Structure formats: structure tokens, C-alpha cells
Image 1 (cartoon, rainbow, N blue to C red):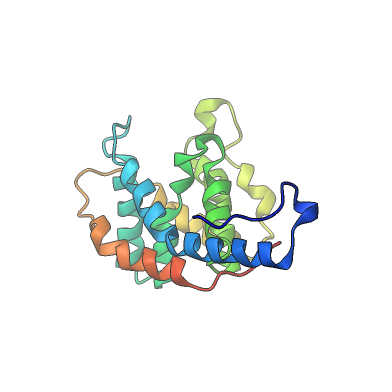
Image 2: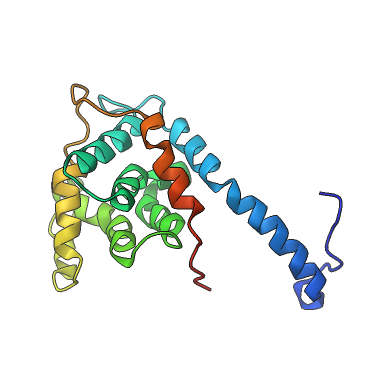
Length: 185
């Protein structure tokens, strides 16, 4: 990009500077689906599980699709662990932050909390409370998050489960990130 902003500190920016930044941001946003698909492909490496992290995500999406979930929910099932690329320790929150401008409040909440809810199946092995999710019992999406984990996330480590390919889900990813994002400043 040849044209640059005029400022070296944001307090000195102009409308023309912000217009230029907006053009760059729009172009960058159009490449979001490509970046996300590349991150998914990067998850197709060695894993302590019987399948790769990518295969886990694909299997989770396949289970959601087989259960008749809507396209947005299937895309969220596919991308629920995408945060592993940047921060495995808080992958749920990273995944949810990526998806927030494009998905419903319900799907955002489920992705954001699925790590804690998934802990029901293994926290005891780390000396943690497997029922830690109970603090959200009164939340309207509590049951939906339990169902997400029980039906789609926790059983999706099976090398024998017939799983659809990333190419099958690519149109869903592209459609999701082509949506007009909601501003959350």
C-alpha cells in the first residue's frame, strides 16, 4: 500500500486518514475467511488424540449438521476450537471473540463457555470441579451449551466416525465472514 496516514499518534489523525484506514480494513475483512480456513488447516497436525484438532472440529460440525442444526450453528461447531491456534489456555474466549461480530448472542455464548462446560467430562483429572458450569445454571443458554458439548463436542474424537471434509464446510465459513459485522466498540 503506497498511500499512508499522515499521523504518528492517533490524536493527530484526520478524516482522510480514517477513510484510508477504513479502505484497508474493508479489504482486510474480505480476507478473513481465507485466514480462518488457513488456521483450520494448521490444526491438521500431530495431536495426542486419535485424530487431529482439525478432524475434531470437522467431526463436531458433521455431528451438528447430521442433527439438523442451522448453518450458523454448524459453522460455530466447526470453529469452536479455532482459538487453539492463538491461545490454547483460553481458546474458548478467543474463538468466541473471533465469531462475535458475525453470530447470534446464543452461539457466541455457547462458543465462549464451551471450554468450561466441556470440563464436566475431565476436570476431575486435574483436581478441578467438574460441576463448575453450574454457576451458569440460570443463564438462558445453559442447556444449549450442555447439549453442544454432550452431543457434538465431547464425542468428536472418534477416528471411525464418518466426517465431512473442510471443502464441504468452506462455503459456510465464507458465508459467515461475508456477513456485515456488528460493531462492538
